[in-house]
Length: 120
Image 1: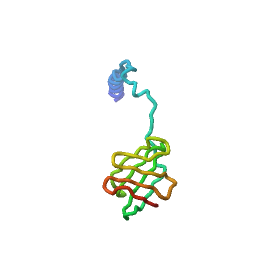
Image 2: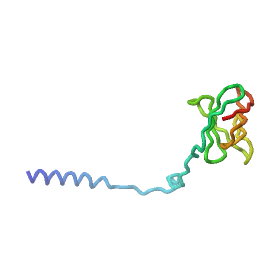
Image 3: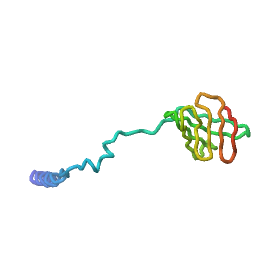
Image 4: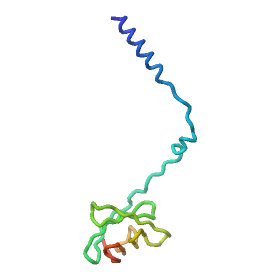
């Protein structure tokens, strides 16, 4: 029995000895790996606004201070709006939002609803 265990150990050791072969790493090919990781902005505030036509707009204000997402339904697809200049409106094609996370009232322009005043 000791012979079988010793032989098995030797076979396993020989098999594992060949597993530790590594090839040189080409740093130019792995340049992306060496760049610092940048995480996407987190949500600072999520608010549901009631608009003048009695529709709802769900707005998420992001931590980068220049991006919001707007949805027409709680589980709808978000549309990202970007602020081009500090203090300016958040915009995307057909969309515009004026206001910030601390405002109780914002003005939202959506392609299918036009421009409206909305409040929390």
